[in-house]
Length: 441
Ligand code: CMC
Image (cartoon, rainbow, N blue to C red; front, side):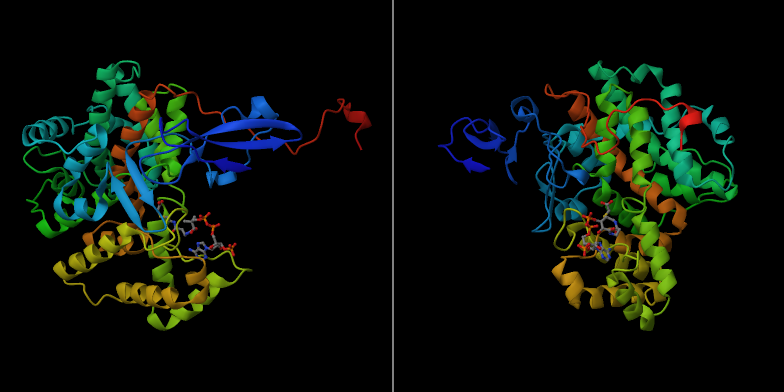
């Protein structure tokens, strides 16, 4: 294949790549984004050559064009709508970031006030949802409860499920961002056998979430401002990450015209896996299993062993081949929270820091460009805040909902949008006649 560059005029059509397969040739346009690698548009490939592309795991395949999030994995850059993640984590707050992701620009002061009011007024869930919860076993994993309860929102909010109505799409997106913390807190309260705590409109988004999780009706609950600020930052860090597995799941589910609540439930199901959102839970379990600093080398050795399935959880990333920019902020947040709560010298943090130190000097990890990702320090931080391990991925889902919804809306509004329908390389039996049971061998 050879790509040829022509003088830049209309960005998308001036460059092309030619491919010839068995004497059949096709010319494929090369599209350029604002930054990042170009893409070869293979849309005509099958028609022109009779071949599909083959790319399990989508390692070289762009599934859509998007204006929301940009990652440069080699440089360790993450931008939401052009703004660097560290600047947003330092200076913005989660609700403002939600506005940015949903609407493309940072809000003016009146826009921000109006958005905060809208989100605050949508935090309650239909009262009948409380009875829906009681159908779950108390020992259900909160992610199982989230898959079910978020999917069930489509049975409660019929007036925002028409995806062809722009107003209903906006209402659904506000409802999802506003109600996720309420449902997440309910999932937690249900698992510990405590009464559900209603949202409080005098508190900001994250403080309200903390009080719904940790307040009890019999005594006042005072939100720790350091914890609230740190959790708000964690929500910002997780809010979007372009076409990751769960976001692609949301887009694929939405491409058939499914309603937004069902699509987000699909995203939650995908996020649950240990290679994705479940990694922070897995990372903390791994640190606990290691237990003491002197056992770190043994686990590093195990992670390098080709005959072992073991991986360092919280290490490596499909896109980042450099330090995950979110992990840097997360590490600093971890220290702040542990300092504020007086658990600075806890064993787990020592184990994590030693593991990071050894792995970053080890040839195996250096050569494969495996660095700590966001999940490496988030588990320690969340546990210090009082969240049980089973809630970690739920918190990720609360944060990522705005990313999922923004991407879903962008997809629905994209004129090029089609139902997602990958092709395959079939390697099963070719056509053969049916064999009656008495003649089977
Ligand atoms: N520990 C040890 N070896 C690893 C690790 C690890 N954590 N991650 C990758 N490798 C090795 C892997 O064995 C492979 O080696 P080889 O080339 O010799 O076969 C090489 O590095 C490339 O790995 P890969 O699985 O082909 O890479 P991938 O891009 O498909 O996987 C990943 C990315 C995140 C699934 C993987 O690095 C991993 O399983 N990490 C641990 C789980 C984790 O922390 N996930 C959270 C990701 S960040 C949160 C999110 O965005 O959801």
